[in-house]
Image (cartoon, rainbow, N blue to C red; front, side, top):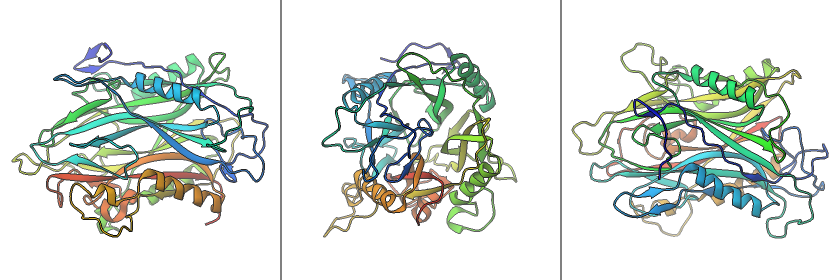
Length: 447
């Protein structure tokens, strides 16, 4: 059942969902933080796991997707709050896992069961079939030994809370930011992770975790902000929280890459953002996020976008539809940060990891078997940990980003592409999306 909300023009005026997750924290003596050599997270950046110099921490993930509550004519899935409650149970049962960060993840499927570790997922591009969406939570955690954990290690519970900020009427991002800072200052909580998410207006509520979309119909979306924060077992953190700030880096039309329709690629955005952070040491980054924003048509300046607005329309683009029209998007880099009284110049880098094509003896690339031809997330995770072991990189942020497999220039550039569209191009009945992992790195590392 959907939670009851107050609505303004079919959109929740403001919804608040706050749930506690038991997060284990290992003893923090102030030594070096390490997955293999160095690890940092927005919530534990000044602390360090108590590990031996030859011990090996690995970065792993666990997904929580919404469960089906009833299977009558209208399917009903549990709320996002309920999904987080199950994450709470898992965390309390796995106290040897140190929660590094969390993120909201949206999966899609058409007529097949959902497997969250798949390297590929599908969306319908045919008017006869709808795409089913699922929205859950992914926990990234550190573990020293997953098979034989140290049960005697002291554990201090931390709690993850979240709150959703949904715009009223035509409010823009700045209005949402004002509301967030009023609550952050009043509740005195640390902001661990901030996300900008799109909500199908037909779903109407960010607590909704499953919905369907018809590809040949236009769809209205609302943009809301989700804030995750950490509290202690004794209550709210006593530290006075600094105001949350946002800095956006949009791709400039530089006519360099034909695969990106002349726009700067993601690497260009990250270089500008990391330079800005280094030149402003009083700005303490919380996390980065790739946000896709609709390009506003009917203007000579293509970088004039709807990024400040909290709503947009996506046109129908199904195969065979007379109303098919492409909707173009730019990927911008959003930096969430706060001001600090202890300035520290940070050098930040990034490295993407994408599911690779498996070297199988024979896989027929039809619509039913293409997914099995690509590496799953477990394989990507293993490559990440091997690279971390060799490079000694200090992880700052982890982000899951989905890119189209064969359309919008992303077939060549992958997660580096900042220009894409929902046009069907080579796809007929469906399009495939690749699930990429992007690691942000703090400080120098071995290349």
